[in-house]
Amino acid sequence: MTLEDTRFITEMLRGIRGDMADVKDRIVNMVLRQTAMEHRLLGIDTHLAAVQQGVDGLSSDMRRVKQRLDLVDGHA
Image (cartoon, rainbow, N blue to C red; front, side, top):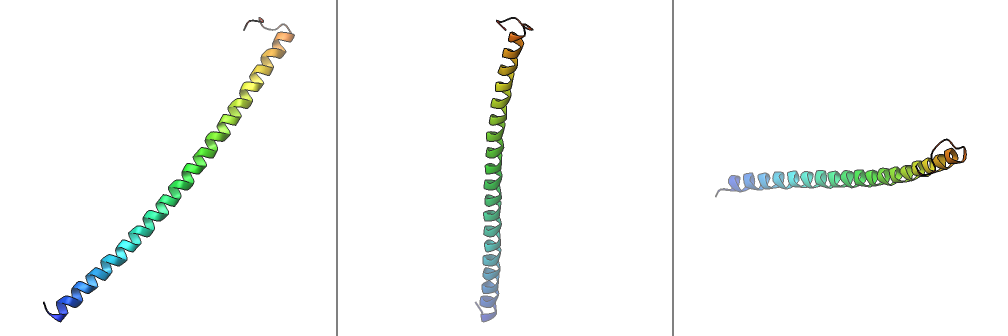
């Protein structure tokens, strides 16, 4: 192998190393974004559960009000 061949191979390997570093950085960024999205979805899910609990409570309160006003059957 000539000196020129060695230089060419060395340049190619440096280029590959640089490309690999770029790919690793992009993967890390994607993982961070995915984790952030997962946390956001978890927060939305928690919020929806709290909203559902509030709606259920209002529904129960409304049923009791209707019962007191004799607007519905007491067994409903």
